[in-house]
Length: 409
Ligand SMILES: Cc1cc2nc3c(=O)[nH]c(=O)nc-3n(C[C@H](O)[C@H](O)[C@H](O)COP(=O)(O)OP(=O)(O)OC[C@H]3O[C@@H](n4cnc5c(N)ncnc54)[C@H](O)[C@@H]3O)c2cc1C
Image 1: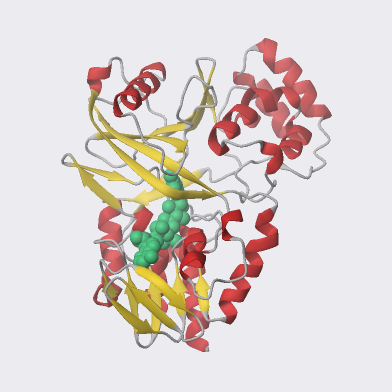
Image 2: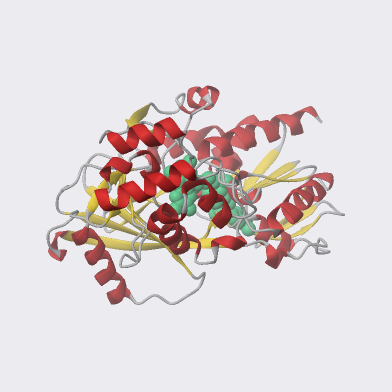
């Protein structure tokens, strides 16, 4: 029998392809993982802004649309800087900056060598120049990562920091228009509801899912998995739980310093507003006065639901009234509310493992760990299983390919 750990989008996708006998062990009460929705105060929220990106993966779009139709959105995200709403990505839209900033930034960008760099800080300085770095990338990424950018590797984020060509920079510095450029300029969201999509996506494998069953131990040599309520023998194990946690429950422990695998934890504040005062999809907030790095509207119809995201220490205690003040400040300063009484409801969600941090240890450790596990018939996949930066569409593809390979062995 094959075993899948986790009924998130990756586990469900693997289950749809696996042949023969298998079970999906899921510690939660419902399928979907981070791609699902949850109910609070009579409202439905996502676990943070979750949109599908099908660029370069037409087969995945076709696949998911068998379960529900998806709506296409042309991305309208902005950077909120010095009281201005500037189209994202900022580097393509210099015309929106005050003239006193634009000239010197442009001169530095033209002079920028674009010659790589060993770490994220060097890469950004070489690609965009010092002034632009200080204006946007440094404050934004410092807030997001909470650690020196010189410790991080460039180029691991799958194009989320597009470097425009010189003619694109020049065009964007002359004309105030919105370029549909770079990183995921369109996105997709289920036309009816994300929850409805996840429910129909899980239907083909629903009878294979064992809910409330948490995997707490794995013995690769005996090919056994232990859960809070039993034990299973497996031929192949497909794991979608975070790699760092997986390594912690394998015995004997693999010879890797798993504490060197770094990640971020995110606090998502979901809120319901009295009305929609702004039209953008989401805003990036580089300025220090905002504790959140991103705020946005959910695309679902009905109540005006929004999310605010910030990086937090994994288990730090939260001060609820301070947090509400931060939410009200952010929403008011960005014009999403006129007064705090327009916040009708809010709810907090902590995501303990949200983003992998790519430091120097990553290339030294992760490929080796995954290869060792594969030799033991443990396929660690999905964004957190492969300890990488992937989208839901990437995860679906990875899961389907992995399950296909298992079927052929
Ligand atoms: C704030 C935020 C915003 C994001 N926005 C986007 C976006 O806009 N677009 C996009 O494409 N992607 C986005 N992502 C990424 C996306 O959420 C993930 O790529 C995707 O949901 C990962 O799916 P998964 O099934 O691999 O993992 P998960 O969703 O984490 O599923 C893993 C499952 O395993 C279960 N599990 C864990 N441990 C155990 C255990 N020991 N025993 C049994 N079960 C276990 C969990 O309960 C869970 O159901 C975002 C992520 C975050 C954090």
